[in-house]
Image (cartoon, rainbow, N blue to C red; front, side, top):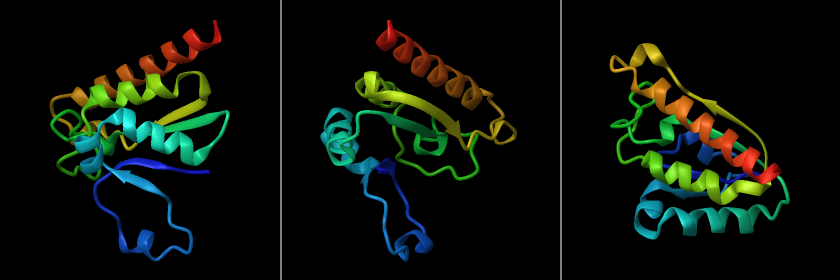
Length: 129
């Protein structure tokens, strides 16, 4: 069970797949809110445990320019932390990918990635206590 949140562009290869991954675009999240999007995703997946992958290029490049595929109109980091907290007790593991420090002269992307890792760990610990 896979569900993607925050998509902004889809490659032809992804469109040609036999089984397309369901997703909610960043544009829909901007309009309807992260709470709505996470609820839709969790209802669709219908799983007790959730493995979370945070792809840093889903975040707007104003906050995370250090990625191989920056794309405008991405998610705000606050919305990503909101999603992490909503998934909360279902978290069983996570990873963060697409961080490319050499592409970020400001150094803000690795700092944001570290902050998101800290958020996931805090939520995981809180829900295990």
